[in-house]
Every structure is written in structure tokens, then in C-alpha cells.
Image (cartoon, rainbow over all chains, first blue to last red; front, side):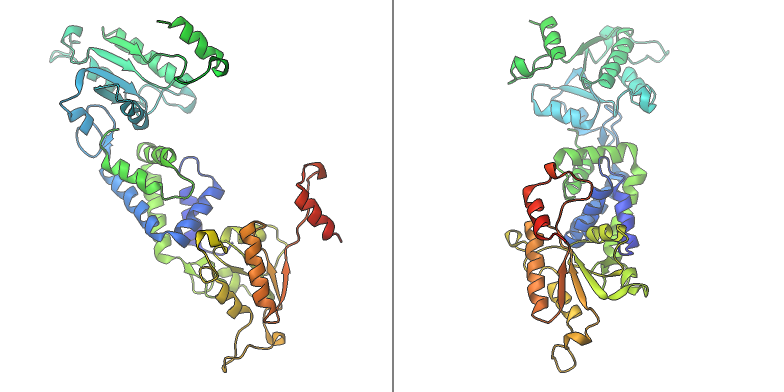
Length: 208
Length: 208
């Protein structure tokens, strides 16, 4: 290896990207410096701009540049439904279905005791306060006064996502809020022979 | 997806990294903004620093911050041997073997007609001038006056790497320079049963 402290430094820095190891980072650094310095500067500017301007929407907790994000501001949205997702990418997947017109709450993570991520590390309290607000005297509003009438849990169907959904469901039901979960079942276009048994069992139980 | 123009902009910018698609870029952007803004700023600074400070070594063409890189400056190096590699990563692999004490020439690419990369796009002319320099009258020096007595071709054993090695060998032999190529053969630790036929055939022809 030549000296290239700047090259080594860049390689080290790029390893902080998730899913990028030593070889990928070296390949990225080489590519950018040899073939795409314009791209390198563009990435640098985008990173700085994003870090300095992006913050959390006060309504739905997603990343935005405004106080309240565009989705939450949209008057066309059904404000009586609130879909809880883990990340902005999950929200984007829901949006692409064009099947949902309500609002969102983005947890920005999931409960993960093994990684030391508890209820206080994701937006659970903010979610509870949003759905079941307290009046001036600090008392919980009766459920019929809630703006949000249904909370749809759309966390991932992984162990952590299911645990997160369970904790949210417990907390909201104790506050008198209607909570639903995305249906588990056989994916569209799949053949039963190749679907895992747990999915078929769930699809059988949830048959309609 | 929320608005987040800065988030979208960052995701778009990260897609310029080699091997990073839309989903990886979105995951990287989310990770950096949610969990590692410090890392994001570090990457931005490393990119800017590298773009502004890294240039090509005038001797070996690798990326460095100095006029001549540390390897080329090292008086312990055997200046009569010159190993030609495609990238700084290949040079680093050679160095890790601790088996080579000569100098390097880094092409910073390989001939690749399908990608429109011809001899003038990689450092071929610079390599020829380095190995077989001309005197003040523009005449090629006789080979016995050359500082470099042997050029070892260590381009990759791919179609492009082999073609690159072939072109370099032709050019240097016509200038009276001794040219060798890394041996092809059976990898250390491998069982013949699982080695591809081309490799075994080469190992048989090059037996010693």
C-alpha cells in the first residue's frame, strides 16, 4: 500500500457505513478518487446538508427538514388512522401500495433488548402521547375524543418487530384505543409448496 | 415516504458509491442520520480532504498526498524491479505477502475496450517512459542503462487483466526490457479435485 493517509482515512471513514467492510470501503475510496471526484464531493455535501438540516417531525417522528413533515401536513389524509412503522423505508413501502390514506408514526427503530434498545430509545412515549393525549389537568382524554380512532401496527414480522407491536398494543389498549395489526398470510403470487409452515399456519388461522 | 428532500438527496448521492443500490443507499442514509451523525460528518470531511489532497505519484502513478509516494521514496527498495499492478488494493495485496522488495507501477485501471478504456486511459505511456526513458536527443536509452532491469506483470488473471499484461509485455519487449508475469498455478491449500481445469492445465505447463 502506498502512503496515502488521505486515502486510508477515507477508507476508514467509509467503513462506518452499514454493511461496508474493509474491501468494499477500499474499492469505494479508489473508485471515487480515481473515477468520480465529482460524486465524492456531492456525497460530502449531501451528508453535511442532511446532518445540518434533517430533524424529526413533531407529529410522526420521521426525518424531515420541516417542523411537521409533508405527509402530516397533507389535508387529504385521513387523520383518524395512524399506521405505526419502524423506519422511513417501511413507510415508503406502505405508500407505494397506494392502499393507505391515513397518517403514520415512525418509531425510528424497534425494541431490541439484545442491542440495549428499550422503549425509551424509540418513540413509544411520543406515540402514546400522540394517540391518547392528556387534558390540561393531566387526565387521559376519553377515547371517543381522540383524533386517532385506529392504530394499525405495521412493524416488521420479525422477532423484534413482533415484540415491538406487542408492547405498543398493550400500551394503547390500556388507554382504550383500537389497535389492529397487518394480516399475516401467504404472499401474493406464491405457491403453497414453497411457503414456510408458520406462514401457512397463520394464514389458516386468519382465514376469511 | 416523508418529504425529507435532504434525506432523499443523501440517498441519491450515496447511490454513486460502487455496488450500492437504492435500498442499500436508503439504509445507509437512515443509519447515518438516525444513529451516526458523527460518522456522517467524518465521512464528509474524509471525502473532501481526500479529493483536495490526493494526487498521483509522479513515479508510480498511485494515489498519494505527496509528489512522490512513500514506497517510491524508500531507499530500502530494490529499484531494479518494477511490479505492475492494476490498483492500490492489488499493490497492498502484494505488500502483505512480504515477498517483494522492489518498486511498483500502479496502472489505476485496466484495458477494457467494452467500457471504452484504451491504452491512453490508463498509465501505459507513463509506464513505458518510466521503464525505457529517452535521452536528451529523444533516443531510447540502451536497455543496459535502464534503472529498471525487470518488469513483473501482476495485473489480475481476468480477461481484461491478461489483455493489459499482453499489451504491456509487447510494448516493453520492443524496447528491450525483460518482462515476467506472476506464475499461474494451483492455489496454496487447495485440493486438485476442486481446482478448475484451466488452472490445472496452466500449472502443468508451468511445472518446475
